Image 1 (tube, one colour):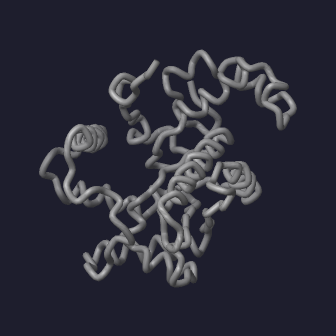
Image 2: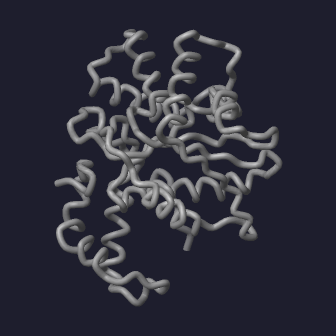
Length: 264
């Protein structure tokens, strides 16, 4: 079974997608979700959340600007401390998108070490359980692609695809004012999740990409960013290629008892 846009559905979505999503989408939207059947709303939201994943191969199909504007408008309903709304989004397509890809790939291929990350996304040294999870998802991905341990050139070639946006026709670049504090980054994370869920609900797929912070100077030059503008991350946006084996990857999640404690 597939969601709109050709992305293979998560197995748990089967019980939601046949009737609930169609009913949900056909009913007039209301500001008060209570006006709609609670079961229908839950099924639709669950289906979208389960269907969201990082897609790493896209069709060369244009994404209408109105659709992008609509999903960003919806994502902007994310909460933020005192309604500060610290997010700024740059939407790149066409020639601008192609220029970004060309310049980033050129720097990557040259091994230009003058480019350093905008900030530390990961800890200086990993430790368990995070190290084990990181390793597993990496080798699950490489295993699908037939890349064995030690095949560093193939690993590097796969990493390079980040800077090709995995073939997606649209790049989203997310920027925050660097004077904002940690709380605004929490707000930004909620906004990013909203972007990805709103995209999935419209038959689009995404891949959030911290890889772009390595080439923030290139991004900044192309977008005309100022000194106070800090790149948070990039995101590929488009229609998933249903024939690409890389898109069959479904990452695992920890069991509930591993991250939740109930206190009565």
